[in-house]
Length: 271
Length: 271
Picture 1 (cartoon, chains in turn green, purple):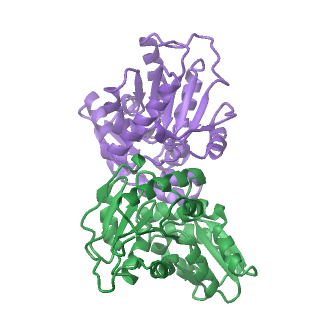
Picture 2: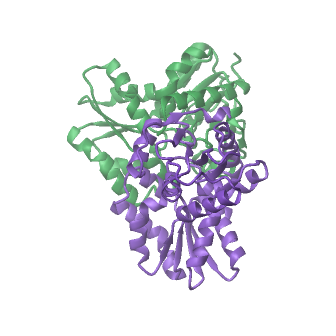
Picture 3: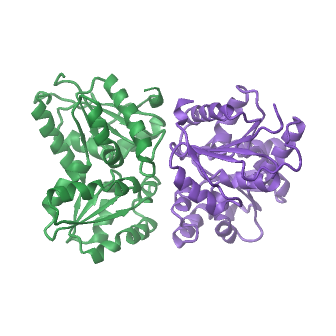
């Protein structure tokens, strides 16, 4: 596999862009092919079988773009499909759950970690499993927050309705006395300031995107497929979606450090 | 086409059950095959091309069940795909938009009608088109309400957060002085009491499901394919989804007048 091949990055929609922007920041020499499954989003309320079938199609598409590695920039896909897909393909792949779990374990002092995510990610139990595989003494407290994604997509990031909903979702963590909270859905970093305010300064918020980019760098180095230092990838990334290219592009340009000039639509069900 | 064949009814998910239950009430002799596209829901934020492609697959599936007629029990699918599909198939089909528009025209006295629906249905402009085709003097005021579906699905039907969101969505209709409001998404009848309270007694709420069942009866009679009077269809309906059969079944049993004993999952992308 050539070191100048791009990295495939995918999500159910725009959320994975919070991972893509972290990769752009930390690995500016790596070219990316991003895919957002906007025709079939959201993933967080759907079943393991369905998510796995969707991910197989996405992998097949990314392979046609000759990617050298794949990032599951979606917690639900990482939680439900990564293990299965890993056995089926010969490309190095990485998800966001394991790096997120690792960071949280490093961060906690009182061994009490909270996880907020979609129904699917919480039901998978994977954050708990990965955390306790590193340190079985750690207590993990989980809470699905299904309204966060529609509220963010409706633009209500700074709104008292979102604050009220967040207060309900997060109140239980006060009793649990967690000192670390994993933002286990790629949309949630967009609510970081609100969640931080409600949880207070003493609780460390973990955004798995940051650690995922570090883990990606290590994986590329291990396999000897990192891009040459000094390569400039900016302007050479490609963005694909399964629906609504223009809406995606507008949202992407509102949160990305680089301009996304174009997004193409593909029929993912053909793969 | 045999009169004892079933009627195909579909929606992006559970919302179309509000139409299915109206058909059960008004046409108790008609057998139904219901399909909910739960793997790809919601439809309301997606594009015309994508919705049309999804609907073609659903029609192909329903045809394998030997249906004699098809009900688009989804406003978005009716607004975006019905016209196109009508030219492609030889089965009688009916949507919810035209019957809803017709009822509203009959109901309004001051010739000011409001429509609330998904982004897609509002963007299609089809309610306005159908209403003004009957009476060009009628003013139509539209408002997309994208958070209603996730709030209903989260079970917050009676919650002050939903009331606050509804208040924002509906406030503009006060100035418009509408006397009739179309509930242009099949989930919205589940918020009927809240919407009714906010709009006041002087505003008539139109649920297109009721009139759709009437229009279906007429269509079946016209084509000579109505079931024999006295036939008992109860217990012979079939329910299919593309994901999450158990979750669907539980929701269905919470709102349907008859018990849904079983729901089967199919891979709709194969059709």
